[in-house]
Length: 133
Image 1 (cartoon, rainbow, N blue to C red):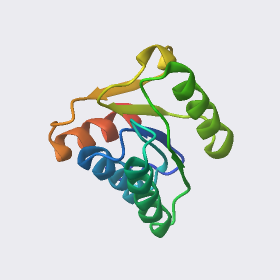
Image 2 (tube, one colour; image 1 turned 90 degrees about the horizontal axis):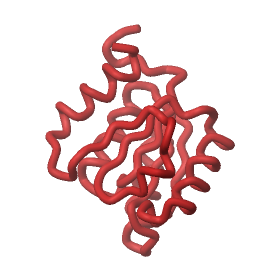
Image 3 (cartoon, rainbow, N blue to C red; image 1 turned 45 degrees about the horizontal axis):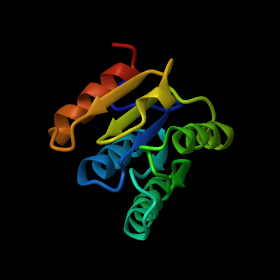
């Protein structure tokens, strides 16, 4: 697998309304992954931001899904994960940025990032994990 070939991989990015989350979601789509894009809050501004990012994922020819959820609510996050897997297939990785109900992700391969993490470094770490490195 080449450095940027994530064909066949599916990732959920929680916190995609943030600058870092959006950059990761788009970067994964550019590397040929399918991406479920979830918000940290279910407010209108977050919903607009994740749908905007989803349009970029689709423009790159990748499958994607926007989930306007409150990620601090474990049940809402659990339902979002189920919907992502129902529509896109089994998740290879979940990336979280900020306040997430992590108990809803138990048993899943997860990378937790601080909102101020360096974008390039975070994306490289994620790609390496997806490639089995």
